[in-house]
Length: 313
Image (cartoon, rainbow, N blue to C red; front, side, top):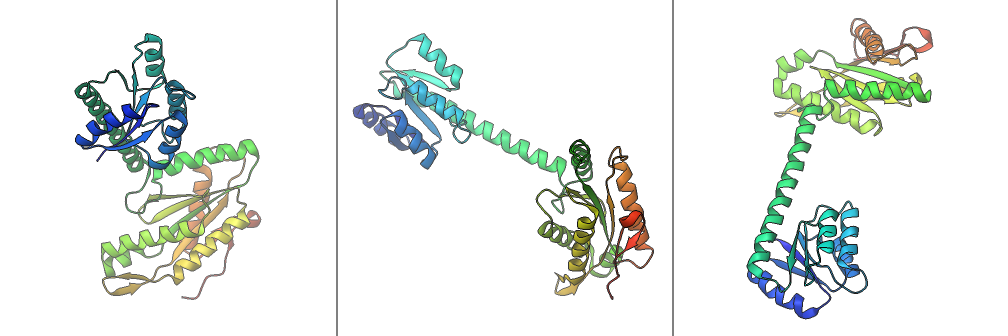
């Protein structure tokens, strides 16, 4: 049931219109001034507003300005109503964003048709906005894990690198790869492998800051951009992720398994033009971790390769 707010300073006008609207299946709210209209809109969010232009105090035009200036109410369709057919008022209302205008005395069938038109348009705009949101989500996120996809991660991280250079801020990059991922798929099935990827991402999100950027580069390989983080802080974060992953138990089809990850960590320096350079270094450190026992973090601390102590397996 669509909710309609009728705004008019004359009680009889509201009463007569309410009978027509309720007979037509609408839920009706009423307000006797512009101020009361704005208060009711905040509390109830109507689907459509019928707004009288000529009211004492705050006029319909002033009320419309407030509605359209408020991000919470700007998309509510408004049909202006008035016994005064002055072109100036009608033009100003339409320019401010009113959907339509109906003259008094109101012929209800005409009003109802214009209301249906306004509600159809509002619904179409809502559906379009929702579709655009979904399209953007599919274009920028990995469908399985919900983290950023490769393209979006590169785009956001390149922006953070540029920002860090302009502001002379620290920035670190972490690359993570699940160890022996093929064995998980072979032993427990691909659905279990998917669950392992999702579980690792959820763990990363739970320990990272809102400003950190997590992306899936492909397969079981992920990257984490850490703005305003020096290499020491990034290594501590990487180790926390690594240890919590090692201790995590994943359940699938009445079976329980665990996983470990290998990690490469690097700082972004001024000579890095784009993400390509630090990504290569982090990838080299990750490769080193893989080939020196796995389940460890390798970083570029102290101008060289420093490996954190490997956990016992």
